[in-house]
Length: 186
Image (cartoon, rainbow, N blue to C red; front, side, top):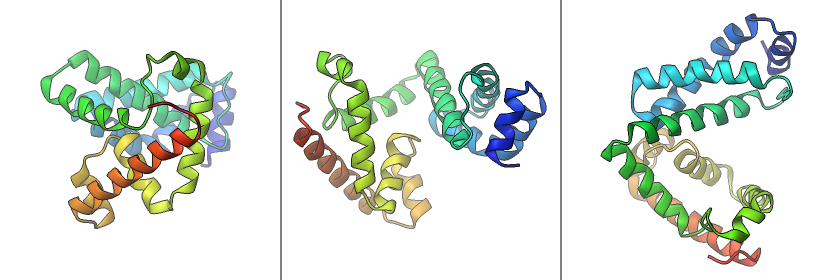
């Protein structure tokens, strides 16, 4: 079943929509949540909570052409909330490391200009991602959106760990330069 049909089921408040969503995207959503939480039970809960939030958000949202992205965003936020709630040293350290890497190229959220220009920053990030090759963009998103480990990315793309690390560092440097040209102070 395609995304448009599934969204139509949500709009008609047909509970089949949830079963179809689970069949279509359940494994991917669970994998996304597990990659962040490293906990099978928590990832299942995030998946189920995603269906509930999607049920409540459709309508007014109608993600006919981007249903997986819509669901993935919900799942990612739920999984990050689980990590914050569990607040284990291991998970906090992993999230802090990723945050520190990105702080070098993106203004801090507490910065007034960042808060005022949130939409402009999102647009700039999308434009930057559009300049990258498909491979570099996929590696960058796997690391900083899906929070995958360097080892996992290396295995997925058949790269060495050092190639992935180097690619990520160069991409962050490119992003920093791009944002500076856009007028963001870092």
